[in-house]
Structures are given as C-alpha cells and as structure tokens.
Length: 184
Image 1 (tube, helix red, strand yellow):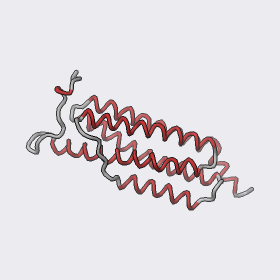
Image 2: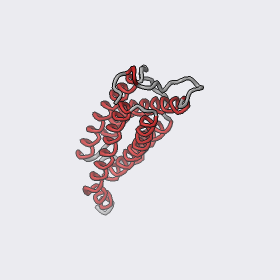
Image 3: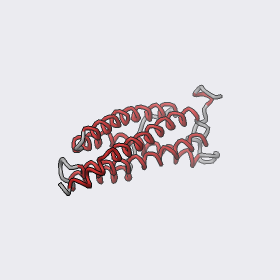
Image 4: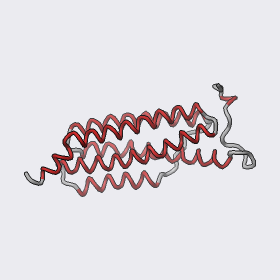
C-alpha cells in the first residue's frame, strides 16, 4: 500500500499522459465542492435562525459544525495533492442556497410549514453533496488516490447521515403538524 507522497501518482499529469483529463476534471470538481461547502457555512446559519422548531435548529446547527469540519477535510485533500486549497464558484450550490433563502421569505415565520420547506431545501442540498462526493470518491479510487478517497468517503457518509437525520425530523410529526396547522 502506498502511503508516502513520493509514491502517490500526481493527478496533474501532462496532457499527453493517461488520465490527465480525468485528473483535471477531478481537481475542478474538488474546487467546486470546496466552494459549495464554504457557501454552506454562510447559508446554514440563516436556515437555523429561520427554523421554527428547536429540533430542526439543533440538527442544522450540528450539520453546520460538520460542514465546517468538511471544509477543513477538503483542505487536507488539497494538501495531499500538493495544492493550495482553491474554490471555484459552484453554480448548483448557489442556486440551492438561493432557493433556501426564497423559502424563508415565502413561508410564514413560526410555522411548521416553514420547517417542512427548510427540510426540503436542506435535503436538496444534501442530495447534491451526496452525488458529488460519491463521484469524487470513485474518481479518487480510479486515479489511485486511496488516501484522498478515504477522506472523501468519510464526508460522503456524513452527508448521507445528515439526509437521514433530516428525514427523521420531518417524520417526527413536523409534516403532520404542518398539515394540521391550517385547520387550527
């Protein structure tokens, strides 16, 4: 098993070498998700503040802390690749976070409907992250960077867990309470 940096393949190979295009794509995708995670560290606090229930606030706060750690983990990935961490604007995450902000504006403060909408927005974000990290893990393995794949796989697991937690919060009566609040 290769552990030292000297033995790790450089994914930024010259254009004539096998895997050069894939390596460049991988790096660009890494820059993209790095920007996305940093964007989330600014967006999640708005969602926490807008949430109605303490349960959702706590889940979002926990994920904010995970997201901050994920930024740090991505910085470690860049270091393993002998690169300075660099962000590239992620259009998808920008759209998803704008959608979350619109949800806050379009739902009544203090309602369970707002929490349902926030959970949906948060799960859309999680699903984007799951898709991205899933692909990055497979690509890291393809380019023979198990060290990088392991870090990305750990982040992927956290994103999957966050998605399941959000589903649990929704199913823990928030959806039903939102349905019933119009009758009250």
